[in-house]
Length: 130
Image: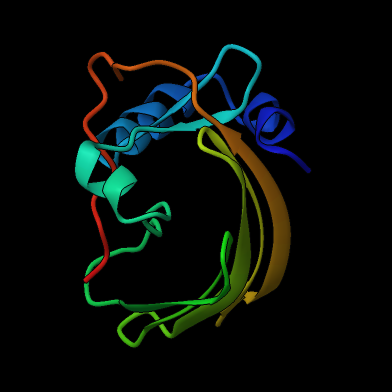
């Protein structure tokens, strides 16, 4: 199920709460139901996007080949671990795949990202994991 389908399946009263929570974390939902992530200059200068992780998580990036990145992370407090890969397609886009293991079960996915606008409006930039 994609994000747009998931949002449509929620009760209408839940969507404003979810959108507010996402906005606090540097994300918003586009009109077509896609997830938009706001990145600041520091994020862009790192060469790869930050991982969206709660506090107390450790993230490790490696670059086995130019334009290719792998990542792994661990969040001991929530017993969540994950890993994935990211391929830079151009200066303004990338594709990624990931797996996540949680106490509730495992999940995996793929994403494609591209630059949308020079400003995020009222959405603050996504925070880096330590």
